[in-house]
Image (cartoon, rainbow, N blue to C red; front, side):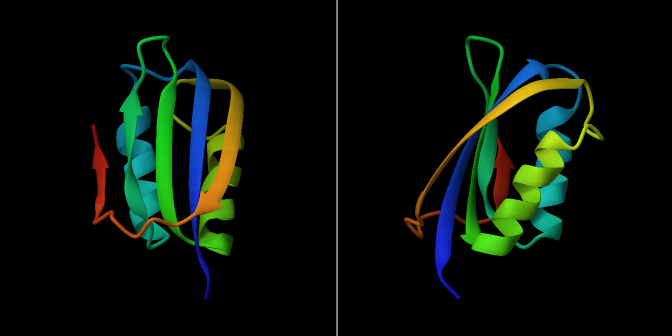
Length: 91
């Protein structure tokens, strides 16, 4: 299975509402590695590596509306996995 890297920027009311914790829990359930962090402009940046299908599932979950807070939009970028991540952490 080819490993990929998903970078997603989530805009909305996503800081201070448990969004990064929720994202971490979903990513770990999917067997992904990576991190989620708040950005200065109020978004949350999510970087996840793993198989294409689990990464796509995480992206769908981010967009599905069952997250803490409120997601207004999710921008994504796909690239090759770098393989330098372990676990999934909140930054």
